[in-house]
Length: 429
Image 1 (spheres, rainbow, N blue to C red):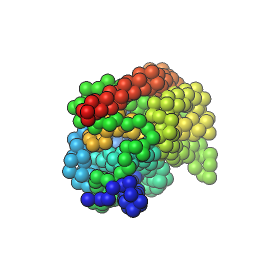
Image 2: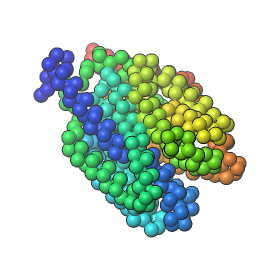
Image 3: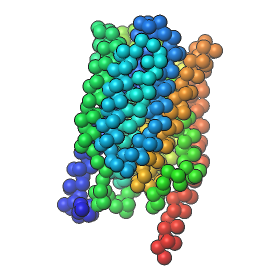
Image 4: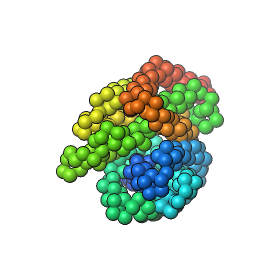
């Protein structure tokens, strides 16, 4: 058994161990980032090469996001009960196979099958990695989850230029094949070094600043609480607004006639925007996670989502020049990416760490629901003749979530945590 974490020697040991575990899951998250954030680079080349309709291609993106999220309750349960290594290893295999199949796809059906595999693989890696972070860092939960999620949000920034270069020189199929193979292999190898913390390897609850539940809920118990469903609705609203931007950013740039304008060191508006978007998306996660560790989850949500609503409105109203497009698109990603640190932290604070990966996975399915709202952006754009109304609607979705965070979620969570403490006190008497 490990020494108690309150002793100096044990503290040094568990600090080394838990930061090593965090670094491993961050690398795994970097390896799956392109599956979502690099997708926009493949859409036009696939459409041109196969004469496919863009809206039909984007169905594959929706399938990917749905499978990435809706399978995670099972994957999370496996990670909680048999450990993370087997789940992440299987995820790595699916990630590689998914993009390799995309490279071979000669029909939309085959492309959709690739999306099923890559979505299942990405979900296994993502859910397990976030679950590991919330378990190893109860005292720095927002920051740790933020750093982990940053690997997913910013990881694609490392490969935007290489992927575009491979697509330009060897075609989109080669980019799918080689990046899929390498990314899946890295996840598979690192998986065998992952494990859940044992007793005494994490700080005691008295060392934690943010109020957390004294009770660990099962998934069934969690699903019966109003707190979970408020979080779920909020997640759908904000995730949908951000996914619309992630899936459509290249299309918006082209419709604004700025995509291929050279603006910095030979880089086009779209290339610079994609790089900054990924960096901003990644930076948002530890930044707002760290803030939430100090000022509370709901207050941080109100700050971030309020700024997100303003950013959406700015891109739709004033983002038609190259640099304004780059700036306002980056602001959207900066104020959207933090949902992947704030919501997991809030969920585990509310429902305890024992079944954290499973519980987080149920909440994460909200992203899958949100994914099917993404094609609506194209419908609205076609009906109105432009992107302005799309961004007005996404701004409103963010502002609604601000109100829910402050005036619904905050009092509900306070009541639930206080109730769990009273029940524990009564049971101890």
